[in-house]
Image 1 (cartoon, rainbow, N blue to C red):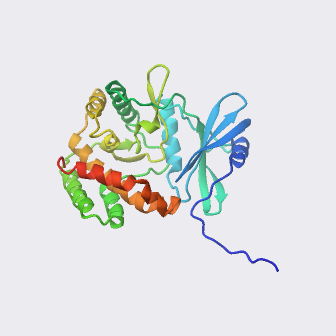
Image 2: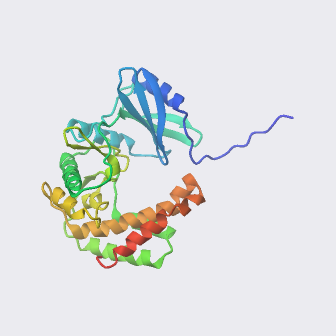
Image 3: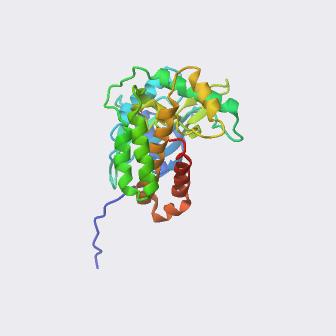
Length: 303
């Protein structure tokens, strides 16, 4: 009996490393010797080795990603400014973004130079966070006036809260979100411009000369730049980080705390919804929601 196929809707697929190796070789003219999957969640990142000893990153984005071309414009700008080593590699048609067909639909992909340097490792120090804060200020200075040739991603904190809150039923979260809205409304002249979007120590590399360079710009957007400072906020080395940032640029700490609340509310909603769609309901048991809720409670006295 002949089996009858069933048409299915796919949430996400995962390309085999050998397929990515062939893709990069064909579209970039790189003589590939090896390819491995490094990270997979919303987007998939592969490390591609070449015969000349250099390494590249191939990132395959989720279906529906709309601002990849602007992100690559930004990466090229930052590479020219010396802020990143992850320079885009043009494809065979001269563009910086290609597409591949996947079961869930068309997915954009990019190829960049593999970011040089090493990730920071514990134990953390005030000196490291001072350099980290200064490096973030340099990033913001480097993108002053940058526009790009393609439509930019725009990040609005109030819209983020509107989208996230329906997924979270905890009354404390709603109260903190309302307090954050009120605090943001009191900021007369918010510092807006291009922000990294995920300016954590996970996305910097320490260079041999002591400098810090950035990579991973898939959450970069035009928005409140103070939102890039929310990660270190409240930690043991926040004062050193803030001092480092202020050596080059001013910042409003009141805006940072309000935007930290926005970030936590967004993260809680993501772990309860989008992450479940990608990883399954068991992922809720990993403890991320509880940790983010605890961080939100810690901010009640300062908001």
